[in-house]
Length: 342
Ligand code: NAD
Ligand code: WQD
Image 1 (cartoon, protein in one colour):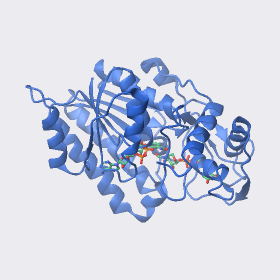
Image 2: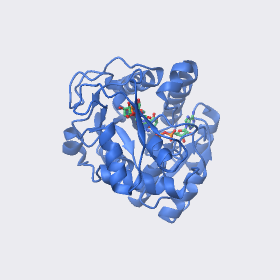
Image 3: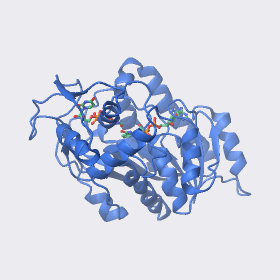
C-alpha cells in the first residue's frame, strides 16, 4: 500500500517505517522535526537499504500537506491508501504547562490532516492512541471494553478527544476505515542500534532515564513511590518492545485493507512489570548497575496498568515476540552506541 506516515522521524514512527518497508509498502514521511531529527530517517535508510521520501511539513499546514498530496496524486487524484498518524506532542508533564500548545498541535493538526486526506481520496487512518485514555483503569487486565477514564493531563485528553473525532468521522461516512491503537509502554530499540528513543532534556519515561543513568549522564534513578498496592510497592506497567509495536501497525494495515470500519485495539504484551523488576532485568541483561533512590509518588501516576491483548491477537493476528530482557538489551545497545542521541 502507499502509506503516508506522519511523525515518521520520531521514536515509534521510525521503527514502524522500517517494518512497513520490509513488508513491501511504499512509505512517505511528513514530520516537522519538533521532537526528532532527520538523521533518524537516514538511519532507517541504512537499515532497509532504500531512501525514505521525507517532507518537513507541519500537519497544521494545509498548503504544505496539499503539496505533498499533489506530488503523489495519481490520475484519479488519490495520493495514499492509508495514513498512519503518529505526529503529535507527547509529554503528559509538559502538556500541563502548555495546554493550548498541546490542543493546537494535536487536535488542530489532526483535523487539518483529516480534511486534506479526505480531499485526496484517502479515507483510511491508523491512529496512535494511548493506554492513558483508560485513566485509572476500572479493571485489570484492561480490555478495549474498559470504560475510558478521567485523563489527568491535557495530553491524555487530546488522545481521548481525537478517538472521539475519528469515531464520529467514521460513523458519518462508513467509507472510512479507522484503527485506534492504544499503546501500552513502548521500550527498546531496533536491534541494529541505529535508531531508538531520543528524548530532549531530562527524560520523563522510565527506560530512557535508566539508560542515561547507566551511561553516566544522570546520577541515579528516582523510583516514584514504593507504597503502591503492587507486589513490591512500585508501579506496574505493560512494557512492549517498540519493534513489536511497529509490527502491530503492519497488522493494522491489513485490517484496513479488509475494510474493518472502526476498530480499537490494545497493543501490549499482557504482562505487567514493576519499576524494580525493570531495573533488575536491565542490570541482569546488560551487566550494568543502575543506582536508584525511592522518592514519593509522581502525581497523576496509577498503581497498575497492563493490557488484555487478546483482541489484537484474535482479530489482527498480533502477538508480541520480545520480552523484557530483549527490551532492556536493545535499549542499552542503542544508548551505548549513541550516548548523546542522534
Ligand atoms: P515522538 O515525539 O518520538 O514522535 C512524534 C513525531 O511527531 C516527532 O518526530 C515530532 O517531530 C512529530 N510531530 C509533532 N508534532 C508535529 C506536527 N504538528 N507536524 C508534524 N510533525 C509533528 O513520539 P513517539 O513516542 O514516537 O510517539 C508517536 C505517537 O504515539 C504520538 O502520537 C504519541 O502521543 C503516541 N504514543 C506514544 C507513547 C510513548 O510512550 N512513546 C505511548 C502512547 C502513545
Ligand atoms: C513507568 C513507571 C513511573 C520514570 C507515560 C505516559 C503515557 C504514555 C507512556 C504516551 C511508572 C515509574 C518513571 C522515573 C519512575 N505516553 N518511573 N522513575 O507514566 O506509565 O506512561 O508514558 O502516550 O501517556 O503517561 O510511563 O515510563 O513515565 O513510567 O519510577 O524516572 O515508571 O512512576 O510507575 P507511564 P513512564
